[in-house]
Image 1: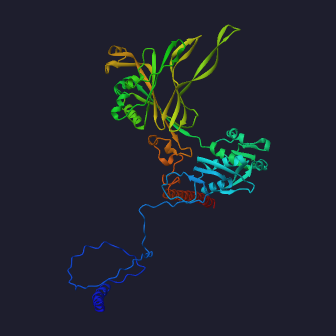
Image 2 (image 1 turned 90 degrees about the vertical axis):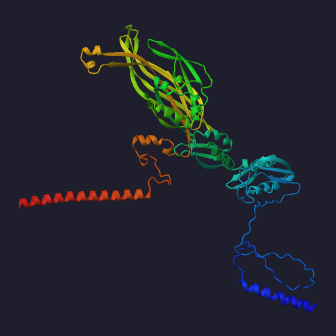
Image 3 (image 1 turned 180 degrees about the vertical axis):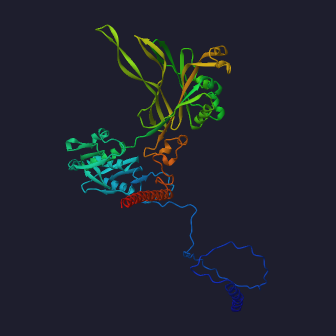
Length: 595
């Protein structure tokens, strides 16, 4: 047996020594890289058959020490559990939203809700456990004793505190970042203090009505608004002041602002027929017209002008009429049609209108207005109209004062933001001179007026189209034979004049878009094509800023302007020196002549 063991050792030792010489030793602190070894070729080794008896070895697991430079990552990282010590038979369940990132253990946002279940538990334990979950600084008096049973779902910590403390005659107050529990009697006996709250968006006087119920005048509370600095000066108990601050944060919000861009396009009737676009055919362009309404109005003519009365009629049938039909009028009835487009549809309509020969852009005003405030556009002239009064003493009519009447296009739009939609109250009025009438020896103008009042709801950024405000005009046209038609007297034989009636339609496009109440620059309001048409550059527009920063000019441009200013100053100084030198030379020449 001993001889066999010696033979076995003599066979294994050379092999082990050869393996150590073949590869260098690995340092303990060096990085270890493990790579898959290539498949080894089969080698036949003739070894003597050694018969040995091997005793069963005991397997011992040894922890592998951590090696510097080697990190072990698990496939799915587990979120560590947050364990809170609770009394027996008491549970607190925290409902957290889906976790998409790292969560700090033991901290919960103030607006998060929880579900609690405390059967017959000490109120102090309930308060401290909830405070632990929300990481609150809590101060509880020794006098607070009692037990309660509560089971609430999806509530905030404030609601839990109120439910627990109210039956015991206690309440909590917030002193900066500390929650203090006090009895209702102690809170009522608190001395009043004065604080100043700055109002950022609203007028201080306007929100006083909302805050007044929280100010207890019997306890010495009062409130004054400083209109000069837009401040609220409030004298109240500290517990009430925090409630007032919370209410101010809710009501002092930035008012929405709406950009109203209008395009008033006047189109001749023949051009509308040539256009040949109907609302349903927009589907051929991958577009669709939104729901629209129709309104009819009857009109009757008098010697003093034209008055218009509306009849409440609507038609919500699908759009199966040509754009020209939008503005076609019957003999005594005109029709108003409205439609809603998104940005792509609006661009297609404008592109089609731009191809017409007799299409005129009347005006294209853009204005930014606050929510629920009217925006008014006027394009036209004020005409003087003389007032005629009857003198009862003389029994005659006399000319009185002169009153100016606006003639042109008036458009009033009042937006109201409703979430992602905008409610528009649109009131367009188109007036024009339509002849004259003689009255009591005076000639007064006749004013033809077209108006409508409609309310629609469109999506934010969409465009409303109003059509059907058509007007018939007399068009004078003439033809003549070249040269012969210009001969005085005889030219009438070689020329002809004709009068015809032409119908023009005014199409009103209104685009409404909400702006950021915290601030918008000119790019959000002004169409860049308008800047291009005016022939000005961006930096000539007030409020211009570089896109990559808030500076109004780049560093290179600023250095260039400084250099130009320096050269200009040097040129001015040189010019002044030259003038002074010329005066000196003139004086010296005068002295030389006197000598």
